[in-house]
Length: 206
Image (cartoon, rainbow, N blue to C red; front, side):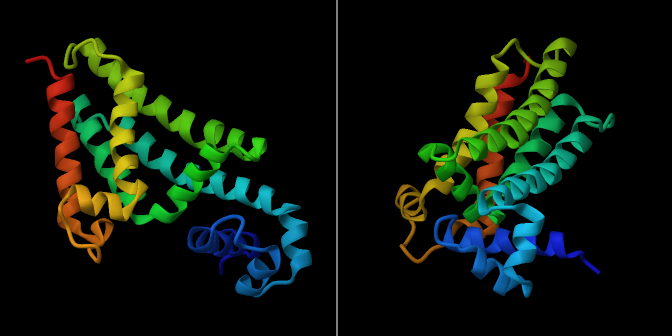
């Protein structure tokens, strides 16, 4: 059976994704998780500390996926980048509300501890793994001598732009207002294939 601490984290994750950080109270978290407020405070101390734990939890999951890709010796460097793209599109599309919440925290810059947690526990370590894949490809001669950091920004930035606003995405893709691109597997595949093609052209020594 799932322990109480883990249950509170997962319950809060859903509430934050649905209602935002400011729109969710500790009392509401306790009620939704079927625990008392004292237990939430005992485990986490504050809503900010609870958010930090969620960042750590989500980061650990993503890092496990990226580590597995990095150390898969049956894959070439470009196949590893393709696997990273597929993982990011799937993860960010599926958990888009939480992803938007994280980016809102980064943009608003109101809570320094949360900023540090997002950057140090999530963005930077994951970027280092992708950078390692790119550098391995350059060293082996499979990839051209590209800028690894800006290559990562190009991939993640494209996905972020698509996730920024459903209305904006639909307008760009000439879709009706009621279309939900993030739930459309054909659209996910379109995004993945586009990024893979970009990376093939950008990275591979012909």
